Amino acid sequence: MRGKMRLLRLLIPALVPVWVLAMVFLPPEADAGSGEKRAEKRAPASKKQIQLSYAPLVKKTAPAVVNIYSSKVVRARQFSPLFNDPFFRQFFGEGFGLGRESKRVQNSLGSGVIIRENGMVITNYHVIEGADQITVVLTDRREFDAIIVGTDERTDLAVLHMELKDEKLPFLKMSDSDDLEVGDLVLAIGNPFGVGQTVTSGIVSALARTRAGISDLNSFIQTDAAINPGNSGGALIDMNGNLVGVNSAIYSKSGGSLGIGFAIPSNMVRTVVAGVLEEGRLVRPWLGAWGQGITPDIAATLNLPRPVGVLINKVFPGGPADRADIRVGEVLLEVQGREVSDPESLDYRLATQPVGGETSLTMWRRGKKAKIKLKLEAPPEVPPRDITDLNGPHPLTGATVGNMSPALANEIGVKGVELGVIILRIKRGSPAMRLRFRSGDYIKAINSEPVKNVAQLKKILTNRFARWIIALKRNGKTINMVINR
Image 1 (spheres, one colour):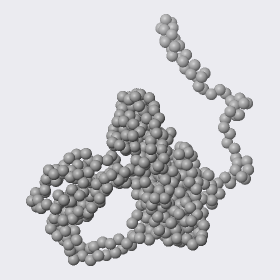
Image 2 (image 1 turned 90 degrees about the vertical axis):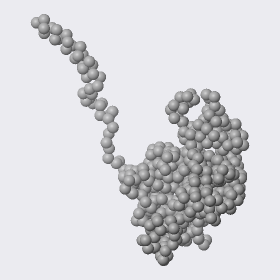
Image 3 (image 1 turned 45 degrees about the vertical axis):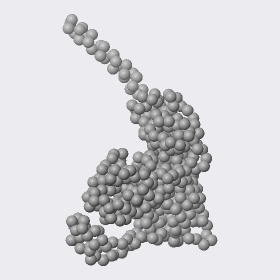
Image 4 (image 1 turned 180 degrees about the horizontal axis):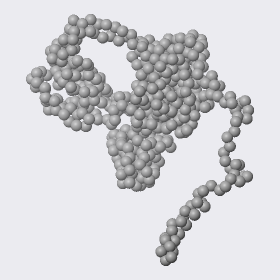
């Protein structure tokens, strides 16, 4: 009996919580009013509810989305397999051999959006890159030749103009892409795989995607609306029928849509179009400062509430940031009230601002926020770039060089400005390529003589040294190349 009482005392404490849990979590018995609290499944109550459709929106917008066919002539010279041997190419060069030149036409397919009734079209740069002929096909199957008005490779955008007579075409208006929110419904219209115009629906999955690896100057809209090859340059529209983005790329392992598509925001599209039409090219504002993203450790050190913004680690003397009193060690948090999360989003925010005005920046300075004004100026062409193709009996034959300046750095997308002579391009098969010089190399000195500009470099290269010692700066490291004649 005593043993049973002891067992009962052990069981009671364990059973009491079960009773409590049962009382709290088990559903009560159904009563007459419980059905009212449950979500009811109901059949459509009217014919109108059954007929809800995107069709009116598509009918309104689809005529402004076009197919773009581009073609270019590719020339190639056929050589004997013997001359593919690097040993022979070293002595005879890339052009040696008895091969004959062959020509073939390379075609590409993409989409575009009419943005003006006079036939102005926006598309991706990679759709028309190098094209000799461009044809735009409307949804009603009419075809028009088009010319390139301007391009911007860094944003992967191109502006075309259709050769019309007195016709006025349907076009899409651009909305403010900054008003988009994650979860908003969108439609993607384009010509995937060349099957004809196709419409897909989805939502905005994410905003401000700066690390998609597509271009260096964008803050992409991510959508799960199916985007496939051939959709490039097509329209991403909102539920008001306005253009919110230009479809540009997808993340895919198979070549098909996996539900991760990227579109260039309409605010960037608007900026590129305005720059191309007004100036013939896009001139972007220059900050004159560079920095890095904020890690949790850096945020804790600077007493930032969270890791966001750009930590300034270099300021160009006399540049806009310097004159706005921005200093190394401060954090740039916002541009015109819009948060920046990394250097790429900072570049995007500045790139969508017009040159000539001013913008408001929010800085993290001495442990608190501070508002400052920044003048939006074009980067200066100082010193003049003096782009030169190098030729002659020296190791740099085949290299194209120029004087680095803020304008040139901004144009080619170089982070930071280091004044001096930079290699911009290298001709295939040239001595400079065989000696493994690279685009982006800074030529600092030749045989211990400093190289400060292109004119000085050309003068040094007129010497016939038996031995060349060329000091380069590559990715922040100094390299000495020794070349014997």
